[in-house]
Image (cartoon, rainbow, N blue to C red):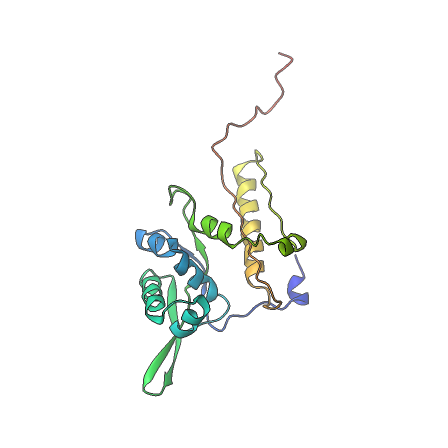
Length: 194
């Protein structure tokens, strides 16, 4: 078991949320497919925010952001986590309904929305070459039971990353996928001598 929690206190959100929610309905898939809505769901993983705060962060009009927040609430991906009175108005703070949004592997004809977003977020400036980053892809033939255990470990690592305390001057992203391929598998043993 890792002792990383002892060295780095977990990033505590200012609201309660479930661990996972499935993007298993057309409304949820459509809601999360929009890049602005995906960004909004990421921003509220730092802390609950009002529509005004979100609009400031994303540089879009408040009415536009309110529309996108309403769609995410209707889809069950965001929730009102608290309110406060400001003059005669009630201000709503929004947070995610779950830390992780699970996508079915057959949900999209092309890229999952976060693949598109990841490509657009990669810092390709010369300075970025000096910063920590890595990409790799491996394919291995393993039993389904081992695959399930490994997938759980990968998800645990992603959750550990999202719970890290906030700090520094740069945001880093963590994108990982673990999936069955459609590639043919090699024979289990060498048959050249037959």
